[in-house]
Image (cartoon, rainbow, N blue to C red; front, top):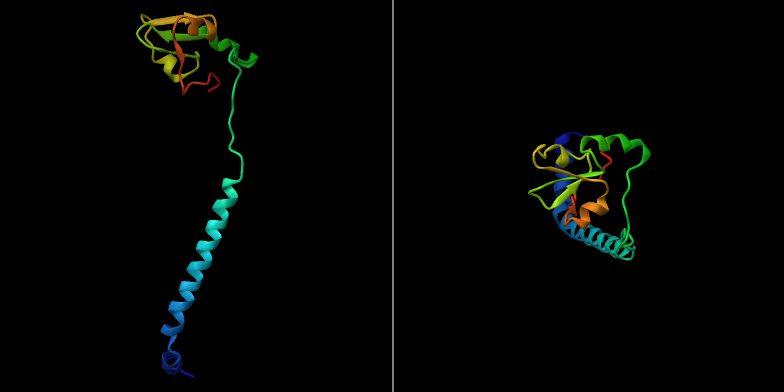
Length: 123
């Protein structure tokens, strides 16, 4: 059987009549499966981390040497509103003339500074 004969046989089968309904059924099955997956995902509880109101962040023992950069546990800029841990890139960008050091994050909070969102002190 030659390629031309096979092509003629396929033309006689009228594949277009079967292709469209088959495609519609496959799309329907895929949509149904995706819908079921989304329902299963909604049933899972979301992850949230909460800390007590008086939570005090401390540096691990391995990071104690990092406090030497700012002379304290956290540093801030005189002109800013955020405090940083000494190993954070934000702390390294504060000029010496504007740098303010605090012995702890709690002391920085008492002075009106807020923690920097991108700085976790363990980078």
